[in-house]
Length: 176
Image 1 (spheres, helix red, strand yellow):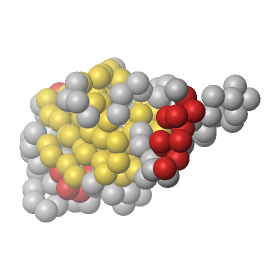
Image 2 (tube, rainbow, N blue to C red):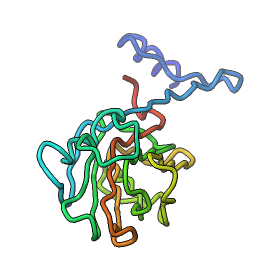
Image 3 (cartoon, rainbow, N blue to C red):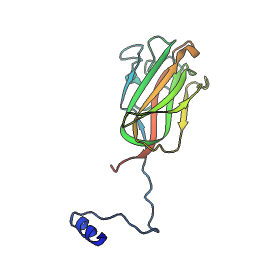
Image 4 (tube, rainbow, N blue to C red):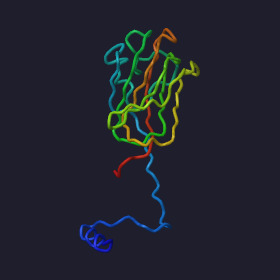
């Protein structure tokens, strides 16, 4: 039967995976990517300080109130920023680049492609250094994700937290 299936697949230009226990295991393809789209509970302005300012790589190099980073409208309550990435991955790391008002981040959640939410970090973000990066590391998730939600509690700092960029790193889930 296995020989017949092999012949059928060969006729289609395909082959069975190797059953050889000594065959090398494929190396996972790792991908680091910046957000392609964003939405937020609120934003201070448009286009400056809007959710779209958290797209792409970091731009703000100093600890300062900078219109190139996302900021919430009020700067003193519970807020969120949701970022979507081009490629689904089995996540291994999230890096939140903050350019001002650190200390408000309260939770990082990955949203699986099936919509299920998975909290991967919850706690108190350190206020220093500024600018700074909150790095959340984990073993590769057993689900694919291309959405990260950042929750903030700006009542902790009574000031705006500004997010310049968020990187998502992980194993590519499908061949590109």
